[in-house]
Amino acid sequence: MSGLASRGSVHIDSERCKGCALCIPACPPGVLRMTEGVGARSLAFPELLAGCTGCGACLLVCPDFCFEVYRYDTPVPYELLP
Image (cartoon, rainbow, N blue to C red; front, side):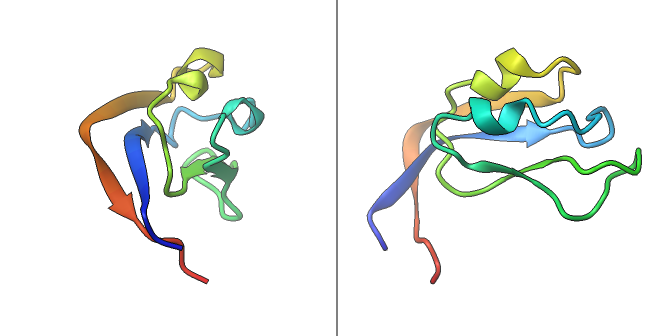
């Protein structure tokens, strides 16, 4: 599938994350998922997939302030791999 574009991105501080996963259902485009591995605190943490809109929903629900949200001036194209 081509012609898709990310309008934003997030930086996730995995060391602050306690693995509550509140961000996963809060993400409108559904581009966050929990890792299968564990972070510095021996907990799973969210990872970002392609397609972020930079909406900031993850930032608003995160009780540990783990997210920094960035919006792009020009969307960045990407392709989903099969």
